[in-house]
Length: 612
Image (cartoon, rainbow, N blue to C red; front, side, top):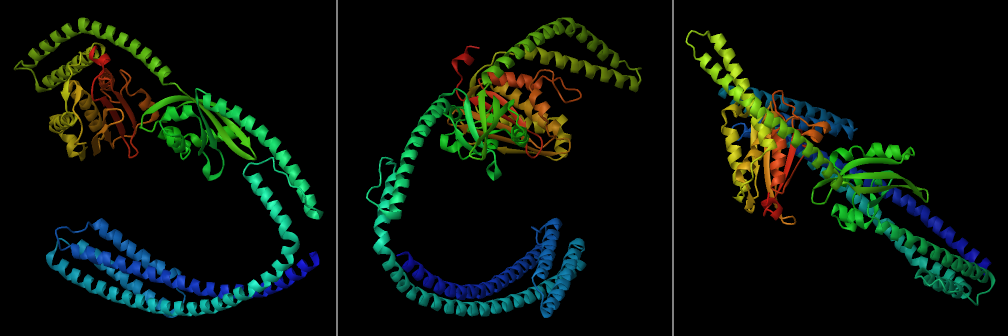
């Protein structure tokens, strides 16, 4: 049986080898043809793109005579694209006649670009502008005709090459049909030889394999002889060993899964190699509950997707330290599915399974601990601020008022020189600043109770924006090019809040944003309603100076300021007022520069807030 199989296989192999050689040669020939066709398609696309660029420039040229004319920068950009595309054509042409036409075409395109630029230069001179525009139109029309002619020639050559390729494919197809027609005869001979002595034992082995695949590890093979008998013995031994290993793995898996799922901390297993580095491959129920995603959603994310932008930038460094053998411990910030940021303590190290490296990360939510620390710190700050404010109010306010009144009287003396009057006015201004600081301290230490009423957040923002625009001290800022953009949710529900305190919060944020954009920029105000949390979200962002991490961490702390004459109480008071409304306020970097402030306000106040 072995001899017959060898003879039949040898004959079939020789025939297949000969047929394969012919097919390889035919395929190579067809591939060459198709390469030429692809090349002509590329040439056709390049020329069509060039034609589109010329038409873009021509449209820009026509627009110069209209009110909605394209800007000079846009026209110059289209001219540059047109020049780049004609230069690209030289990468795939080598025939001398074609190169000559392309050189001529590039020369004319350069002329066209110069003519267009001259039109832009003479736009203020009516007579010369029209003459140059007509000249440029003539050059552009000539260019379009030439490129159209080249496209037609390319299409004709492409059609010829395509027809030739079809003929070669047809010949190859006929050979394949012949080969397929004779193949079954050879297969039948081989099958007749093999079926008689091989099919039965193989079917037995296949049936046993299928049962083993379905999990029936109790199945054993019996009744086979010769080589198949030896194979059956090996199969039975393998099945017994596999059963024992599966039982051990299942027990180990149960123990691991129980520990993994019952852990109170979030546990992630991350891929540590290749393009999938950082992908989440496993997560327990604590991780699901902590981040607000479903289990399937978490497994589609990378760890950077749930890190804040600052923390995501540090992932590569953490991985490097872990690969060096370090078991890292750090406090970082994660982002829930609803966009809220929360702190956690992470412990992470390297794991290896089957020559593949993973990272085990155990995360503990430390929000309550951070809140307790912040509450303690804020309590101490409030205590200090209260004592300081009370002392300042009694020890400084009254004497300061007397000094201010005396200087104001002195400044009205008729014979006082103007220079001296200016100095006295500066002194009065500094006294007013001290009074403002005392007032801010008192407001921070002993804020007034909120007076809750039905409040339209969009209306409050509109009013505050109007005040910022109309404020005389802000007019220079508007002239510097500051634009206010309003993106309000018009279906925003009315909330229960103190409108005056909200105005104070929004005014602080808007004025800070304007101050941060000394060279102009965009100030964006957005509102939206989150049905899941029944809260109104307000986002105020600017494109001013970029905030570093140290400023973000301290920005809401009392007396912290980056302004030369700031008190450092505006944002601290804003944060306290928002929290007294049962809301939250946070800040993050704006990817375009500047800062983004997010405020969450509940639609209906809780009993805790009402009983304040």
